[in-house]
Image (tube, rainbow, N blue to C red; front, side, top):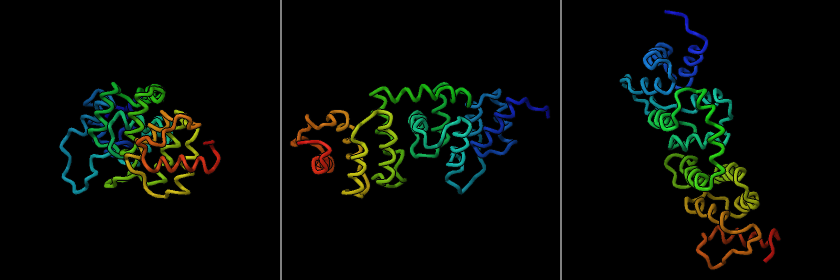
Length: 235
C-alpha cells in the first residue's frame, strides 16, 4: 500500500473517529470517493452492512459527535451544533443517522471537515435572522427532549433558553428561569415552549403592551404576576 499523504491520513482518522468504521473500510470508502469526505460517508453508509441486532449500528452517536466537534474546534454545547443539527434535520441531540448526516452535508454543499468548519460562521449568522431563529428555536424542542417524551425536562429547557436567548437578547430570560424553578418545577410542554418565544418577541420587557385577556398559556400569565410580585416591573 502506498504511503498516505498527511492530508489523506487526517481524512482517514476523521472518518474512522466519526463513523466508527474500521480503517480498512474507511480507506475503501475514501478511495472510492476520490478522498472527498462527504461522498465517502455516502459510499460507506450505502454499502451492505453485516446484519446486526444493534439498532444504532448505522448511527453517529455521542462519541462520534464529540470527535466531530473536536475536529471542528467547537464545544459540543456550543449553539452552532444546534444550528448544524437543524440543517441536518436531526431528530435527537448528540446523534445523527446516516440519512441525516449525509443529507445535511449534501444540502450544505460540503465535502470535507475543513469546509464544514468554514461554514460555522455562516451558521452562527443565521441566528441573527428572525425567521431562521424562529425555525431553529422551534426545532430545538424536539431535538433536545428525551426520546419517547412529549415534554422537555425543566433543566434541559432552562439550559436551552439561556443558550438561545444569549443570541437574541430577551431581558427577562433569567427571571423566567427563576420563576420556573421557584413556582413550576415541572417539564415544559411544546405549547409553552412555542408561546414563550411569541411572548418574548411581542411583549416588551416592561409589559406595557401585555394583554391580560390575551390567549397566553396559564404559565405565562403566572409569570407576569410573578414579575409584579417581585417588583421587577410595575403594574
